[in-house]
Length: 112
Length: 113
Image: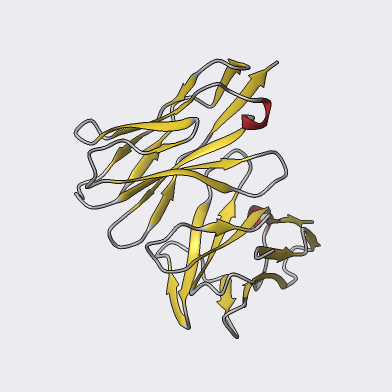
């Protein structure tokens, strides 16, 4: 089945140690999004790619970067994770920017 | 900036009954989209229903319907004939004309057998 896949589902990293979360999709959607969702809070959009065009939200910290090497894959890089970066990270895709978003299951990041 | 408010952190409903989840938003735009997403425990978020602001008719998807009051900036979700599988966190979301997404803080729905 076509879907949005996030690996790993659970990631543990140490304070300050770079970590990469991955997202892949078989939907052939043009747009891919990364959200951060902290406990009991709303998902917060970090950035999105429309094809190769990167769009960063104004309040996304520089510590967060993203790569999209091809249509199917998108990576979230956290260069120096802090304790405050512990959260669920959700990847989503949509055919175009105005279409419904399809979400992956999320990666729960723990920072020790 | 747009904000989305869900004033009910938790709600419960008896199986087969009807429940309404509330959502209000703040915007100065006239063209936007509104969504309700469902996030079951440990499962991924899925779209329940969406509403285009320019449409006066309320969206309906089977047991799910919305009451969209544009002037009041209100967008409530009604779930009829509630089922156990409806238990989840429900998020209201706003998408601006500039394609920015804003989510509310969610309402946790419990369905009582």
